[in-house]
Structures are given as C-alpha cells and as structure tokens.
Image (tube, rainbow, N blue to C red; front, side, top):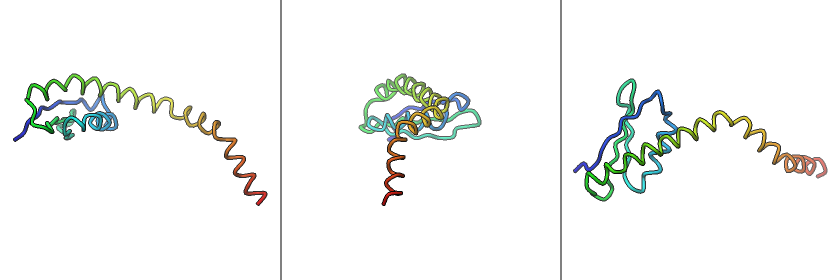
Amino acid sequence: MYQGTSVLILKALYTKEAILATAYKFTNRCSVEIIDHDDKHYMAKLISLDNCSPEKIASIIPEFLNELIDQELRVDLSHRTGELRKIIVDHAFSPFKSAKSKKKVTT
C-alpha cells in the first residue's frame, strides 16, 4: 500500500542535479521517486520505507524543501566558482606535477 506524499518542484527554480542530490539525502528515511510531471514541474514522491503514518511522512516535506534550496545553492556556487577552484587546485598540485615530470626526464 502506498504510504507517502508528493511535492511539486518548479523546473525554472531547481536543476536536476540539485533535485537528485536532495533525493539522495533522504534515501535513509524514504524512497524518493522523481517524475517529469509537466512542462513546468517535476514531482518528487516521498514513499515511506517503514510504513510510518502519512502524517510522519508529510512532516518530512519542510526539511526536503530546505534541503532542495541548499543543494541548488551548492550547484549555483559550483558553477560560479568552478574555474577558480580548478586554478587553485592546479596551483596547489603543481609542485607534484613538476616533480613527476622531472623524474621522468632523469630516468
């Protein structure tokens, strides 16, 4: 028997990446099914793993929505700072790269 609730998610506000990351965070508490509902929405079905009450599964919705905002901000920051992050990582590991290339030349 279906014990769960559904949440409509605006496609214009949230990326698939953020939605999937959010869904993953809840897999220890419920099964999450993401459906392409219509042109403007995805639907997340939150399904109880342990036959808990509908009220209990519905109480997860505010936490799910807060996590969705958090994950979308992470995606946005990653896109905006990705190039800078790459430059920092490349610079941080450049001594190892130059040591490796010197070792190849001498051997």
